[in-house]
Image 1 (cartoon, helix red, strand yellow):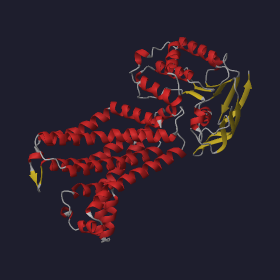
Image 2 (cartoon, rainbow over the protein chains, first blue to last red):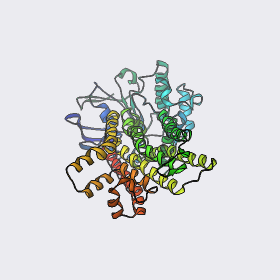
Image 3 (cartoon, rainbow over the protein chains, first blue to last red):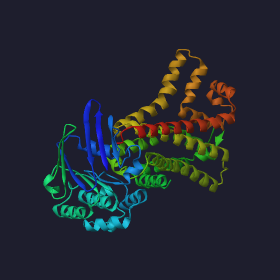
Image 4 (tube, each protein chain N blue to C red):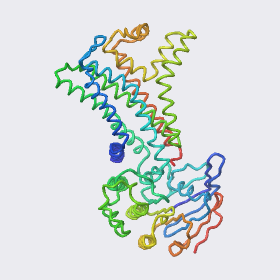
Length: 212
Length: 275
């Protein structure tokens, strides 16, 4: 489903990914780990089509994500590590997502309710004025409401309290079938029950890839 | 197409809520109000009076301040979104880069053009209410000039925004371009060339390549069809083209320039890493 083939990505003289190859298949839940600067985010961004690799290629269902971004991103849900300071109101953000990605707004509200976030009371509020936890809950609700085969989470629980983390993992358990789940995480113990594959990266390379 | 309109609509809504838009609208609306309070319409200088004089003063001030307003408020649109990781999230949805980029441009164009044109419309309506004669030819010329000027500087701003990684650098470049067009070409470069006895035709050609200069000349061309206030330069311009052609050129050339910059900006945006 996701095929990373000998990908090298450089920024100036710094090599962020060096000849990285891996394949992620359906029903795999992967914990992507490594120290800061190991290349995890670069790998994620290459999969999302944000970066053009210096060599090698990334294919999502056989398509290049940079060249066929619309087709590829229909199948991907993504939650970044830190919620960006989007100035749109929640209602506008939901409109953006609903029109561009064909996501049912009611489903976003449903998952937000499950995450104990009352969206309806905050519809006119700017997204960036919500608390860190509320923002993250909304982004998680959106990612679950979007009908995707690939879900990519970059440290999604960083802003969540323990109760919200439990809600998140419970919802994820219910939604992981027939998908690729990719977690960038520093806390393996949190996702240990969820993942069936662990990848360690260091200095732009995959140093260990184990199925558990 | 629905995504293009969506991006334009949301950018427009977001901009209208922003504080810079309030300041921007107040500046241009305030200018018109100030002219009425100061009695500009009742004064007569060099034969220009009433609403014509008010519109001339308005366009002359607008030619100087509109470019910098557009540049500093727009130049950060893509680079700022990239800086703050907004782009990373918003582009994680299936929207083509073409729709995102041009949608942003359309939304931002409406935002920057509406207040300047609206201030002028208010002036005309209020002037008519006070019994002044409405100079429709000047009004339509200025509508076209403001349209072209907004397009030019919006195109330049998006071009800068597409390749600059940090919004601080983008701001710096925007200021430089404004100063360069406003002062360097007009005063420093032209003076230097005159001192070096460069051919007058070349000097005038370089001068009119500057969109701010062409706007300035076009703005007075209806009041002064012979361009006598410009001295000998008028001979070169009017010898080369008729007044009507010059007016069309003063709208068409900057519009094309803006579109070209916007297009090159898009090409860079498409080819570069997005975040």
